[in-house]
Amino acid sequence: KKKWLPMLSLMFVFALFLTACGSSSSQESSGEAETEEKEEKKTLRVVTDAAYAPMEYQDKGEVVGFDIDFVKAVAKEAGYEVKVDHVGWDPIFVEIEGERADLAVSSITINDERKQSYDFSVPYFQSTNKILTPEGSDIKSAEDLKGKKVAVQNGTTGQAAMDALLGKNHKDIKKFEDNNLAIMEMESGGAAAVVADNVVVEEYAKNNPDKKLTVIEDADFDSEFYGLLFPKGSDLPEEFNKAINSILDDGTYTEIYKKWFGTEPNIDVLKE
Ligand code: ARG
Image (cartoon, rainbow, N blue to C red; front, side):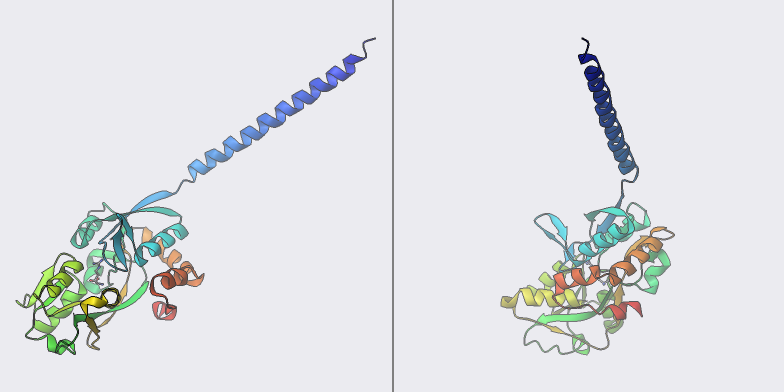
């Protein structure tokens, strides 16, 4: 008579089984969520002077540029998230010195003077100063800048080059807080030329054909290398140097470089 009993107990066992499966799988997923939370990436504060296209500039309120793509790729490789803040050039050094930022990316040339107060990564970009001047001007070399007013961004290697050429605090060196202001000074006739990093002046001349500008190189200007800037004694440079080497080797750097410059980078020169 009680034929339904085995059937019922079978169903009961099956139901138990399903419940067990469900609860075990839900346990598993909550366990996963927990480890994900533990491994959540630390966010580093990166400061920059976003007035140096195509390296770092503002586009619709967003900080973009080669350096920004680069620092994001390196940080990702090293296991960090980044938040990039445009603070301006002089404030970069104040923020890093006060350890209110973890690092800076801003086409910052590695040099001995800066190395005294800050730590740098390995080089990630080669550069040199060049002269931006109106087409047809009689400036053909750095030497021709003597007797002319030259606009530079304050505290840059462009300023240092003019200090060396004309003398420190020379009245003809006009110093500006950002490089775009230096360019505006030249365009309004207050200076005969701007001295700044090659990629920046070249990009500007190319993007503003109506302004009829020309870019002059001079062998007297040093070859420079950019590095990421860290507070002195930071633990990050070691991790970031490894990450820079990885993205130089795995094609990520090349991809970013091609996106911004349309040509292949010379990676060997960075590794010398
Ligand atoms: N490379 C030059 C220097 O280190 C100029 C860098 C200026 N960078 C900028 N984002 N305005 O002095």
